[in-house]
Image: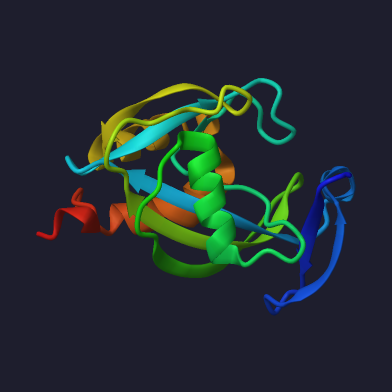
Length: 173
């Protein structure tokens, strides 16, 4: 059966469902999760998306996440996506909801961060590879070449990361 995405209203409530290909083709407003993954050394995992992805193939991303399936709770969707894409589990901390829209994607974002303890297990269908970067290095790279990164991650998470003064909340400092 075809994956059904949860459709969201402008107010952030679920209003229906649609097959994922239709969501992409018609740029329907849906729900999606994004998770910034830190390691215990306060670095963020930055990875390259595979060239087969249906949205922004080959770009670099500093979030795990994806489309919320019909009937799925956003928090549970975030847990599922972090486990599927990067093989990580851990405590998710909410950064709240936000909206994102461009010519290719329109969605209600459910934003989180987490600390990954242990090695990553990358999903080959979605992630080509990646590295752990200091927050300041990620911000500098995104400023120098923003077109190299996922535009939604830049819009939804980079301002928050910049406000951390190069220290993620994971550090406890």
